[in-house]
Length: 184
Image (cartoon, rainbow, N blue to C red; front, side, top):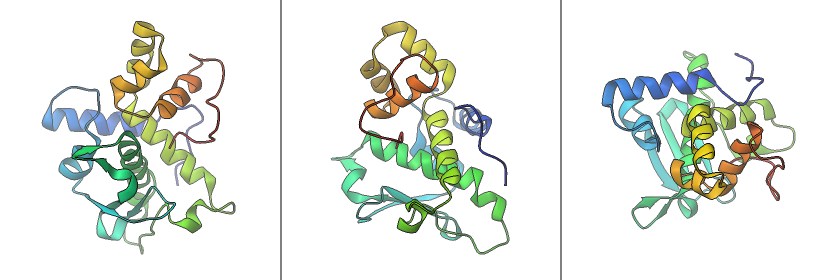
């Protein structure tokens, strides 16, 4: 398995975005994460009641499941929903594709998120998801234009928390976001 990146970037996310833009064109941001999953990669996205879990990937079924309670507000996917899909795409690209020919696991089940779980896999999926939705150069440009984390979140259609973690990871803000340990 490829080790998790040491920086808060992942070239595989850039490659996936570039592949999508070459096939479908359009704006680079906000990243059309649902279309990347469904149209480019042929994955399905379904909503189910997942309790405390935001989402999961079932590679053998080419399926991303998002928590119905977090998934949409009317017909519009929530910002958390977008990050969950990007995170599960991280599991698909970084982990599931490496296990071709084997019984494919399910990622992000309750036991995958427990204290004894492989946190490196979750961290790698978070880094991938953040990089997919919020490419470093575009984040730096958005920050330079406004110096406001809420504006950055709006630009990328992500939660304010995810935007603040991204800004912090690049040293653009000094303090880590309060009240959470992850960007998801």
